[in-house]
Amino acid sequence: MSEDRDKLKQLLLSEEIAQIEALRKLLEDQQKFSEKVSDVLDQATDLTIQKNPHFQKKFSKIDSKSFARHIKANKQTFIDALLPIIGPMIRQSVTNAIRRFVADINRTLETGFNLKWRWQALRSGIPFAELVFNNTIQYQVQQIFLIDNETGLLIEYAGQEHALLQDKEAMSAMLTAIQDFVKDSINKDSEGLSAAELGEQLLWLIKGNHANLAVVVKGAPTNRLREKLADACEEIHVEFSKDLHNQEKWNNNPELKVQLESLLLTKSQSDDQNAERTINFWPWIFLITALIGWMSWHKYQQNKEYQQRLERLENTPGFVLQQLIQNSDHFLAVGLQDPHADLSDLPVDIVVKSTPFISLEDTMIGARVKDYLDNKEIDVTVNNGVVTLTGTQSLSSDLPMKIANLNLLPGVEHVDDQLRIQLSLEQQFLQFLEQNPPPTQTTINQTPQGLAVKGHALAPVINPYLQKAQAIFEHVDTNLLAIHSTEELQDTINNTHISLINPVNLNQQQKDLILKVIESFNLLATTGEVIKLKIIPQSDCQGTIVESNINIKNRAFLVEQFLLASGFQEDNIMTEMKYCDQISGIINTDLLAVSFEVVE
Image 1 (spheres, rainbow, N blue to C red):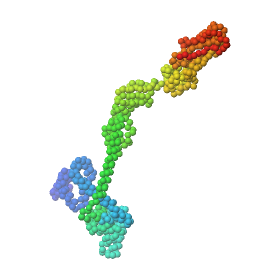
Image 2 (tube, rainbow, N blue to C red; image 1 turned 90 degrees about the vertical axis):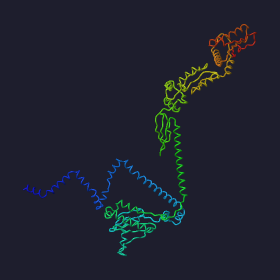
Image 3 (cartoon, rainbow, N blue to C red; image 1 turned 180 degrees about the vertical axis):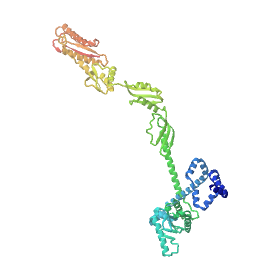
Image 4 (tube, rainbow, N blue to C red; image 1 turned 90 degrees about the horizontal axis):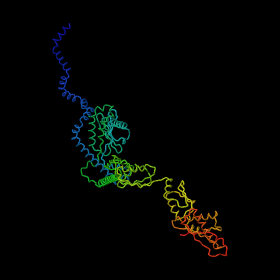
């Protein structure tokens, strides 16, 4: 039964089966199917666009992502293609912008310097801006409402939000209510309200098929403006026909809002004047002069700051300026910097970008030497590579080794060491005693503050000695020092009288007097002058002359031997005998004595 049905089908539908098989093979073969579709795709697309405008919008949409990827991959190609187009557009745009800028400035200057209008505003109480508007603007479209005819709801709005008398929705409802009231109360067959006055403003209603335009105009609009608004209303119904019926797009349609904002027109009174107006050049001259002056002053200030920074950097030791770049908020100094260069005093707006190097300037050599010596008590001066060291140094420091190595530092040609050795107090005391032995009959001891001098000394000898000590030591104690003058010592010696009644030996009192004479004589001898001590023995010449003269010799001998025994130099002794040549009848024990005299 099945075979008979297949045979019958083959007999009756063989051509159709063959066609279906051919179509199946065509559909399965993508290459052939694509070729067949490509033959009718162009014609089918044209027919679809003609019959379905909605498809035309979808078909004309561009895939932004793929377009962006293509631009990134072929930047130079797009630049080369757009350059001939963009160049003239930019030039034209800049030209128009400059023209508008000049026109705005000219208008601002003319109105700003118009003293007549300012006086009129002050006298009448009318705001100056309102007076300028009345004298310069013919009309200005300030508000545009697109209102649905059936519901009275606001579809879209464009204008100055702050200039609204009340809420936009309330404004729309009010206009619809007023228009319905006019139709119902005056003439039902009429088109309704077409114009109304709102104080200084004029309200126009432009009728549309699905929506009306409510336009608020200030000034004196022309019929040409109303015709333009009517054409715009018709154009909106054509372009946004579906959006006007779609309440989801109401108050949420950027394209429609841009279309309405293009109708916010302003026309000045001078736009219709064909005659050439005389331009007031004085405001322009003032403005240009002020602008040139300000630019010149600003440029002068910039150059002044630049020169100040340049001079400061060029005079900074250890820094070699290669380039100084002035930016908006700082200066960039590029150069070479010595490690010992001090840049801390530079102004804060200078940013330094430097490369290390070794400077051979005297200032940098001095800084390098100071850093190496690391001694605050040493003053360093450098002149053409010659380093001079002044100050003090300690005997126990490693400073001498460092000074010996100064010639190894870069730039040091020669070292002039003028340092003074700083001794301890004990070292200073020993050195002073070695160089300045204490005078005769004086002793010198070290104290915590300096030294102490005690004993007896002659003024001409001790005073220079004390001056040397005071120049070295902070404190010189002379409380135990007796200072004598030459006259005082001479008087002491010359006035010494030793009674020797029995010239056999000397008692202690007599010896003390002789020792005082020796002390005074030694002090006198410290002046360096050649002096001698004269011994003068005497007698009262009682008894026989021979006995008296023998006693005189004995007295001289007794004193002379004590002098020699006390360390007195024999060369410094001389004796003057006063022998008796006759017997005296008067007993005078004061003459039984020995006196002294200093002989120069």
